[in-house]
Image (cartoon, rainbow, N blue to C red; front, side):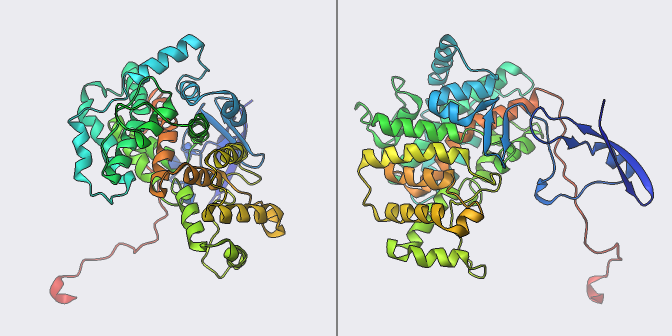
Length: 426
């Protein structure tokens, strides 16, 4: 039996169907309201389901994150990033044969055309790498315009794989260009994470010296960031994609959305905060500033908009962060000392405990990337790399079923209609 709700506006009653979710909250189907001359008001879409999806489920109160029904803790501890990519794209975990074929297909698509590489020369050395990455992804449409038929499932599959394959290469090129160093070509003998790190820190023609501990931690960072339901950047990809634009334009729009410090730039903001604090002796002072509602200072990397208890990704990232710190022997780094002091306070101070302000994934991933030696400005690029499989999966899911161009409404609060006044009469 279909559940219904009834609303009454200006004495007129309207019945609306309730759509049943497989997990989580059911939703009221308000699509029929527009025919009655009514629409809902929901700034930020915090109470609005903009689509239906089978990809990711989040229970923020319980601290649950599922990719295709699998708990993030199990995937991060037992799967590789490529297995997770395959899972997101195809709905099921791959067999060993399927994984090998998927890996080979990605490796076949990871090289960037030599002429296309010149796009990076148009950027100043000090340019933020996210600007380079966004432009490069958008520019891929000129290279692969013959295989961007969004109505063709095979074309979409090829495009999704190409983006997952090529984003580490583009990200590493942005890093190398910023340092004025020669690009390092992808090495098909290396795993996904190690190959990315080698393209950043290695030299062409020389074997990889990337530590297995560092490569594994990076692989886990990619898994933990692979998808997160209808967040701002994923919703942007869907919204742009709903216009039937080419996939590279839709993904580039997602990159722009992710760049914001309130979204993908949060782990970068953690390091900026640590640098502002400056010394472990000032931690207590800044904690008090954070508690002062009249002080603009905010502690970054604590609490989460969705997770009201704890961030399940942070619990996984914490262990890999510890392994990287031990591997690198950087426990005495001044910024990392500040971070550890903040973490201790957050776990013991009633102010943080009562407000459930636990360290989130941005806190631990920021510290981890700092320990690896990755510059702060590259943090959001790595988030982009990790989120790519989620973006292309949501884009493909939307295009695989009937959809409408996104067209949010507004509550108009401007002037009533009025007559134009000629310039000489004003």
